[in-house]
Length: 70
Image 1: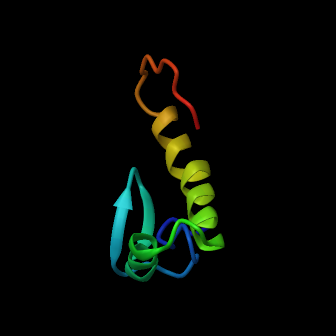
Image 2: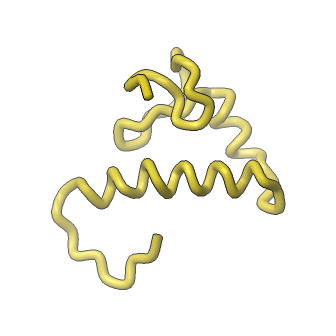
């Protein structure tokens, strides 16, 4: 995946947010904010974030994570 592409849709990012070096374009950000938790989109976004952003956080500075569940 291109470093400047969106985590969700993989399109080149020219706006949006960056969380721990992971890009999310404005369109996907808005979808994520407004998604209903009972949809497949919610599960898709949740898994993408869990696999990408959480792993970046955990690989970062040394932390004493206790009872931390992914």
